[in-house]
Length: 101
Image 1 (cartoon, helix red, strand yellow):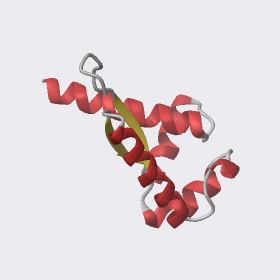
Image 2 (cartoon, one colour):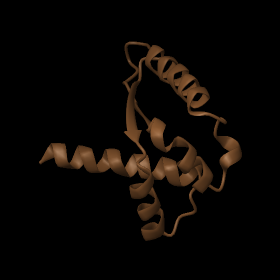
Image 3 (spheres, rainbow, N blue to C red):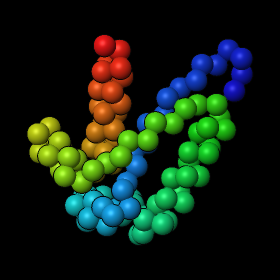
Image 4 (tube, one colour):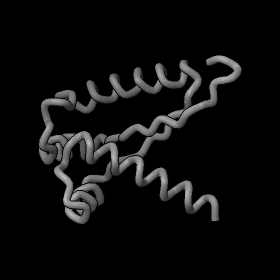
């Protein structure tokens, strides 16, 4: 990272091991998710290292199945990568707002 470059916050969805298979089955884009939690975790950890090595910060947002399903219903979203990303971004924004109070 150059001296003039500001750190950015990269938001990542983080799956609980005990819910990975259930979440995967619910999502419309199952083909985009690795077949096992272990394969996903390896990929995710590599992505975290890559982001951190670039000088940016990583915020991991745990995607709880029940909360995500309810959120998608409330927002009228299909359970897919876009919804998972929006869910994570919204969670970080809420946390930042609460921390600023």
